[in-house]
Amino acid sequence: MTRSIFSAAYIFRSLALMMISICLLGSVYIDVARAAVMPGGNNGWLVVASRPDANAAVSVARGYSNRFPQTTVFQSNNGWYAITIGWMNQAAGNTYKSQLISSGAIPHDSYFHNGERFQFVVWSATGVTGGGSQSLFAATRITDEPGGSGGAGQQSPQGYVTGLNPRGDNYLSLRTGPGGRYQEIARMGPNTRLTILGRSGSWLNVSLTNGRSGWAHSRYITSLPTSPPTVTPPIITPPQVSKRTISPPKLGVVGDLSRSGDTFLSLRAGAGTNFPEIARMLKGTEVQMLAQQGAWIEIELENGMRGWAHGTYLKAPEKKIEIVDVPIIGPKEDHVQENELENIVTNLPDGKRVALVFGNSAYEHAPILPNPKNDANDLTQTLERLGFTVIQGLDQSKSAMEGTIRSFVRNIQDADVALFFYAGHAMQMGGKNFLIPIDAKLEDATSVDFETIELGMVLNYMNAPGRLSIALLDACRDNPLSRRFSRTLGASRSSFVKRGLAAPVAGGGNILIGFATAPGEVALDGDEDNSPFTIALLKHIETPGLEIEIMLKRVKADVYAATQGSQSPWHNSALRREFYFLNKGQNDN
Image (cartoon, rainbow, N blue to C red; front, side):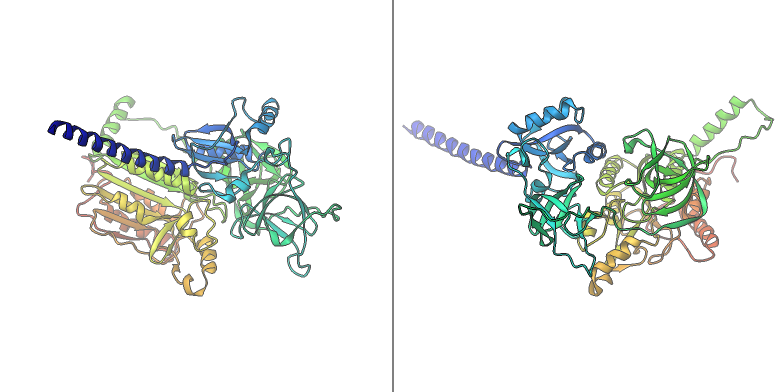
């Protein structure tokens, strides 16, 4: 009898635990489902490709975005990145997909997906990113397939621009997203004809007769009656950026073109892709850089032809080493090489060394900085000779920089020495320092949180017991982005944004932090291929038997002399032991 009661109680308890587990599993399922980006119904995303790396996926997506303005990149829950050209009704969209495949516009293995795997948007040609939202679905719906809007068989409403002030700007801005903080991509004059694709609050997603799409404020758009008014073609020239002469002209060369998707760099008649192409330049073509307008560089070729090319794909030429035919007197050449190699290996200190080197030059919303990319490349080669495993990031966006930092953090877990070098734009706000990726705009108060990377976060990951850490920043240049950002905050908050960088506290870690100039001051980019700070650093860093703090004093003296006293590097050290990049050799005195 007792055993029966015990068995019944045991069964009852087991059933109760099973019910609780089912409830918990149900709640987890709901949370997962809620995280997916699904347009719902029988609608699906038209997926044309996928890549395991975010940068590679965005590069592919940019190639589709000219033809398909709804192109979007999603991070999937399997770790891959899916490239879609928008979403639509799957039943009606099969015909549309077949037409695109037969015309060669998309791959033959393209398919529809309901979005259950998709977690959030990492990049979109529409400018809308993040998780599933009304703005995202309105901006990414495919509207040019057979049958009208999204395959629903209904004609999208037509409209035109009206209500502008003829005494004011007298144009309506077309932007990449639903808000005044998004980038302006075109200007529409009075009575410009357009198609209304969707709405987000008081902003409308519209497309023009030339195929360009974006967002505009609904206050100045009126639905089209039966007889449309006279149409004025849209003004598609973006705001003009002043031209700055490069004096004297600098020698350049066409660099890596893998990010462009082409095997050539276009030479155009003006500073923009809307100007006609007049020539195509292959990798390695030497040019003279004459002037700069935004991200575009005016150049002259050896044959005298002049035009404009995008500065992202131009770089300083490799330094040429003159080889002089001098007779060798002494041991055989092979013996000398063996001794030199043995001496270098012997002089390297023991322990694992890992370095993270950033160089941001090609800013999309600020003038190009000529030297940071050169500084990063030259220092990378030097650190590799000094036994460092170098993780390098050149001209990286916010998401790309975050990925590079994560790789660095994984590699320093068992490192004896961790080094961080950054060249590019940075800013201080409220006593904290922020590194600025090349895609940052800094247009409103939220920009610092979402568009920059705080230096303190990187230093915290580096600082660990038993590890010696070094952080060197050549990032105190005069920064037009931070000046513009300060103006948007108003008088009460702009005082938090200061010149140069703030002095970070080294804290209790075994760490040294060095700046190209004193806190609160502005450093020079320099007229040579490297900045004054990096020139001095490269000069002294390979000196055998030179302790790092003594080395930095020599760097400070060189920079001070080279800049006629206008720039004086600074460092703060909490190192508890001496550090040498290269030990003193046996034959060195």
